[in-house]
Amino acid sequence: MKVRFAPINVPLKRRIQTVAVLQWIFSFLLLGQFCCGLFVLLILGNFWFLGVLYLVWLYVDWETPRAGGRRSQWVRNWTVWNYFREYFPIQLIKTSDLDPKHNYLLGFHPHGVLVAGAFGNFCTGPSFKNLFPGLTPYLHIMPIWFGCPFFREYVMSAGMVSASKESVSYVLNNAGGGHASIIVIGGAEESLNAHPGSLTLNILKRKGFIKMALKYGAHLVPVFSFGENELFKQVANPRGSWLRTVQEKLQKIMGFALPLFHARGVFQYSFGLIPFRQPIHTVVGSPILVKRNPNPTNEEVEQLHALYLQELRKLFEEHKGKYGIPEHKTLIFE
Image (cartoon, rainbow, N blue to C red):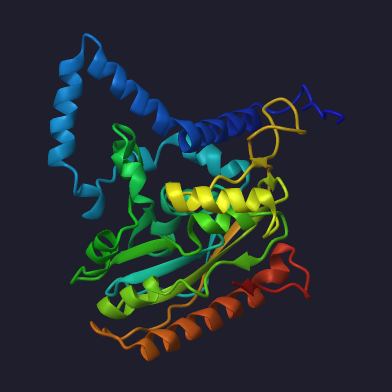
C-alpha cells in the first residue's frame, strides 16, 4: 500500500482541527477505559480514600443520568469543539420551526461509526439553540457509559443522558415543554452497516421510541445526517460472513458493537483512526404531531411508526440531491 503523506505547508488552523478530532476519538474510544483504570489505581494506591469518597458520590448521584443529567455550558462551548466541527465541517439544517411549548423526540439517522453529527450538533456549540430557541437537547447514549467513574461526569457535562426508558420518560414528561430527546434509532447494531454509500437503516423492528412519543404526547421529528457514513471505511462484513456473525454475537453480549473501521492518520492520509474530512449536513425535519396516549394499542403504534417511516423517507428524498446522493439511491429499511 502506497502511503500518502500530508503536505508540510498545511495551514495551522487545519492542524488544530485535526488535533481537536484526535482528542474526540480518544475520548470516544479510550477515555472511559482510562478513567476506570485511574479509579482502580486510586483504590489500590495511597490515595484510596479519594476512591472511597468518589464511590460515595457515585452512590448518591447514581440516578442523575436518568434524571436529565448535569450539563455544563462551559464544557459545551469549549473552543476545541469549534475546531472539531470545522474539521468536517458539521452543519445543522432547519426545515421547520419547533414550538418550545411542546416536547419533542428527534429520531437521528444513521448511526454511522461514531455518531459524529449527533455529538457535534446536539452536544457542542450554539447551533441548536440558535435554530430552535427555547428547546434543550438531550442526547441519549448507552447506559453502560454512566457506570464509568469520572467519565460519566464528562459525558453528562456535554448534555448526554442515559438511553434507558426512565431517562427518556424524564425528559419527555416535562409539563412546560421545551425538551428535545435525541435518540439514535438504529443503535449500536446499525454501526455495522456504516460503510461509505450505505443507506441501510435498522428501524423496522424499533418501535419503543414510538411508544414513548405516544405515552407522553411528544411530537416526533425525523433527522437525517448526510455524510455520517462517509467518515470511515470499514472491513467488509456482509450479513452471513464470519466477521459479521462474531460482531453480532459480541454486540448481544456486551450491548455495543465493534465495527472494524479505519480512515486516515495525523500526518498521512492512508491509514489510521481519524475520520476523513467529509461534510456532515444534519437535516432536522418537520414535526409529526402526536396526541398523548398513555396506553396505545399495537395498531396505533404501527400506524405512527409507518407515518414516521414515510416522513423520514420524504425528508431524505427532498434533500439527497443537495448532498451528493444519486437520484436512483434511496433508503433501505431493515
